[in-house]
Length: 161
Image 1 (cartoon, rainbow, N blue to C red):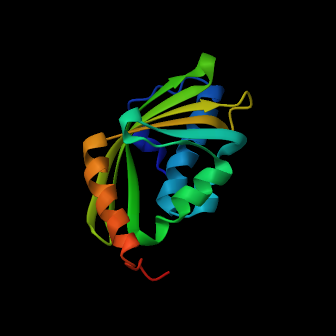
Image 2: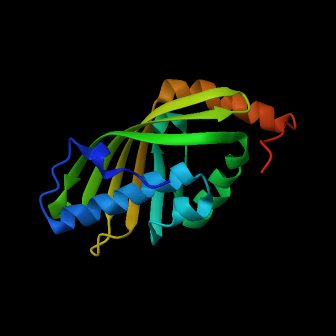
């Protein structure tokens, strides 16, 4: 699924480099909308580190290999995963993009919906992300993921692939 540039109506794309930063940020969202690890990891630099906040959720920082191992185990338990961008902010001088977004999906334990702020630091070439800070709705995450984890631990099956 390709992201529609029109959804960025609150972003002022004033130069070619801003457009490149937004293109890279769009690739992040598109990867999650495709819901496969190859697409999710594609816009990341080899040295990319991802961290989920707030800290009270107790999630570790992950390099690409660790994130692939961690996140791929959840893919079969969701379908129709869709990220919608609410707003973006581009800091062209620092090669940074922030995205406010929400997601929705069907899961094996019921509807999933979360809110995010993604803070992305890009490489000098602006085509890869080397730092990915993901802020999530901690109340929702703290109630949803224990239910999903319990379902998985009890031998619950994912959706047919």
